[in-house]
Length: 287
Image 1 (spheres, rainbow, N blue to C red):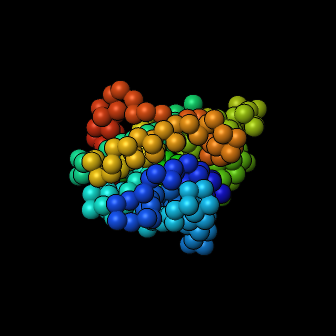
Image 2: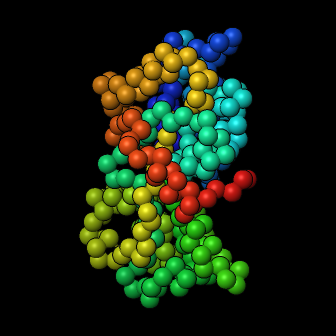
C-alpha cells in the first residue's frame, strides 16, 4: 500500500493557510503513473483517504485527481484547475518542455537515489538486454515509475524485428527477486530502494543467485510542483515549509519511513540540467 501511504503523507502536511482564491477546496493532482497496475478500488480508497485526511488535519476539503498523465496535470496547473501536482522526475522533465511555467517546489529525496536495475540469475547467459527478448521479465507494481521508463527504453533500443519483451507483473519487488532467485522468471527490473531492501533482507540470496546486468542513469527524484505565479507567494512558502518540517513530527517520520522518503529537499543546483539530460534519454510520449 505504498501509494496510499504517500498520498496520505502529502495530505498530512498541508497548512490551513493553503486556500484558493474564490475556492475553499484544495485541488491536488498525482500522476496516474503512480498507480500503474493498481485496481480501481485501490485508487478509490486512496482518494477517500486523501479527502478525509485533508478535512481532519486542515479543516479544508481536499480533492485528489489521479486520472491524469503528466501532460494533463501540467495543463490543469496552467489553467488553475489544480493547485499542486506530484510528478515522477522523468515525467516532470518532459512536462516542463511543453509547459515551461511549471515551478518545482520540493523533491522527495531518499538516500538510495533513483535508478533502475535489470537483474538476472547468475546462471543466465544474457550479456545484454537483447539476449532477453521473448524471455520473461518481471516488473512489480511497487517499482517506481522510472523502472517502466527504463524498460521501455531498453525495449525500443532492441526492437528491430518488433519482438517485445515478455512482461509479467509481481505484487512486490521482493517477490519478483525471490522468483528470479528460484529461476521462475528470466529477469527483474527493480528500483534502488527495492534492490537495497532485498540486499538487506536477503543479502546472501542475492550474492549467491543474482547479478546486475544493466543499471540506468540517475533519474530526477519525484517532485512537487505548481504553476509559477498562480498562487500567492506566502501560501507557497508556508506550504513548502510545512513539508520541510514533516520529519519533526512522529506521524511524519512514520509516514516518511513507510514511503521511503528521507526528506523533502529544496530543488538542488543543476536540477534544470538534470531534467534536460533525462528528457534526452527518456522522452515522454503524449498518452
